Amino acid sequence: MPRPLATYLSLALFLALLFCPVAPLHAAEPVQVEVSGVEGDPLDNVRRALALPHGLVRDGKVDRLWLDRFARQAPEKVRVALQPYGYYRAKVTAAVQQVGDGKSRLEVVVEPGEPVRVVEVDLKLQGAGAGEKELLRQAGSFPVVRGVVLLQPDYERGKSALQSQAQTLGYLDADFTRHEIRIAPDLATARVLLTLDTGARFYFDGARIEGAPDYPESFLKRFIAFKEGEPFSYAKLGETQLNFANSERFKQVVVTPQREEAKERKVPVLVRLTSAARRTLRPGIGYGTDTGARVSVHYRDLNLAHEGNDLNLSLFAAERLQGFAGRYTMPVETDHRSSISLQLNLQREDVSTYQSRIAALELGRTFGLGRGEQATPYLKIQQENYTIASVHSQSRLVLPGFRFSKDRFNDLVRPTSGYRLSFDLRGAHPYFGSDSGLAQATGSASVLVPLPWRLTFHARGNAGYSLLDDPLGELPPSIRFFAGGDQSVRGYAYQSLGPRDAAGRVVGGKHLLVGSVELERALYKNWGVSLFDDIGNAFNDYANMHLAQGVGVGVHYYTPVGGLNLYLAKPLDDVGRSFRIHFTVGFEF
Image (cartoon, rainbow, N blue to C red):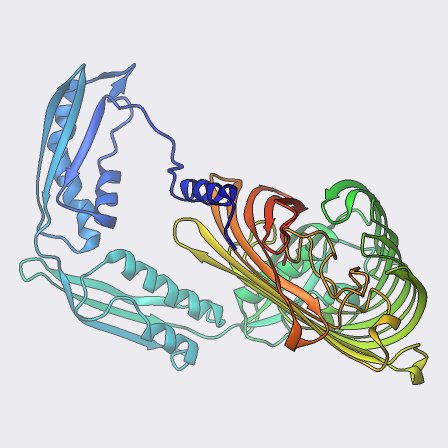
């Protein structure tokens, strides 16, 4: 299908923004320093060494005597700046040239010569941890090896990584008893001699928690990432810090290893907490293309009954969606990620495709399986009254199910790398009190990949599959699949895609397949532009499915609480509509 001119203009605008320079321009300085003969990191280090001293230029005028003295010192400064990169026999000349209008240019010409190469690396481990697999692996990946140019930044980075790995494994006294670089400038060779003595291993001696007296000790202990007797690890201390901070219950968390109080190499840990407000009430306003303008009120009590129980209540009203959501969460003592929850949802939805009123109660047991990984078996009881395609009906479903999710992103406000995977399996049968029998599976995946030139590639997919005992027409909209909208196929109205009845009205389908690719270019600090291509639909038969497609451009502005995303989308399968605007708040995982 031919694209309209506006689509090509949007593409041209995106490409122009993609390659446009974003660095500010600076006026010419009274003294310019030009360096020739080297490039890359050595050049950067030379430029830092030749930074003009404060006072050499005053009120736009150059102190010529000072500049000449600086030029005489420049060759030695450059030679020293080149040594960390293996150049020990560099020849350097520097001269000052007048370029008119009271401006000067310091010209520095470098002949770096042959770089020093490593002819021997003698790296030894000794002490109680010399046989640790992780430490041996770190030593094996030491960045300075025989035959390479001697780069002291790599040498220092390798040393630091090796010592840090030893300390991470609990060898807190690990240190280098020998660390030498023997250089023969005339032969352009270097020998690296390193010996790391790990010393004895240290262990955790339990944790003492101060502050937050309103929370029971058993609740607070859930956030401790280590156990008494485990090898000491700074990573475990950092994980403990994050566990407390991410609970939203404490405004200040300080985790301190008390090394000076260690006995028999057992280190006690002190955790100091300052509680945040227990109860919060937050009003909110917003807008989304799918639901329209909305207002909301959120109430939360993070320590109900002084047991660490969490009560979360939300009341919201939008043009096409209104409801109440309540969740009561009871922590499980064995793991801070695990809990038992009871949820009540009352919801009314009125969109162009259907009208629905839902009352649902769900009991779930969440198991924390690791960082960003959760599994929840649940039982959901749902009553739904609905109208779809002028048919009024009601449904009662008892839905046992299991959901799983795993995610890892580098930033929750403006992520540039990471992924999320989730799936939900559920079923119903008249034997358990449901009106209908069914088995249903849904899954979603999302991945972010950072690319050069401040680009980010985002791909996502959603799928659903249903096995039904009864005709689809006897099932409520919450069980059927629809497509279209801000987080589905952009360019089409919310829930406007799916199988149609004889009168041409969308009635939803048994299966779902949606995919999207998007390429975003970051601009300045808080802005971004993107191109996207969405495709998908709901359907009843894989052999006869038709996937609708939408393409367009997006503009993004990122705030500390989330992103504001404005999209202009063209539906390629709707010849009667040119463009549709979509607006969302936040990042879609």
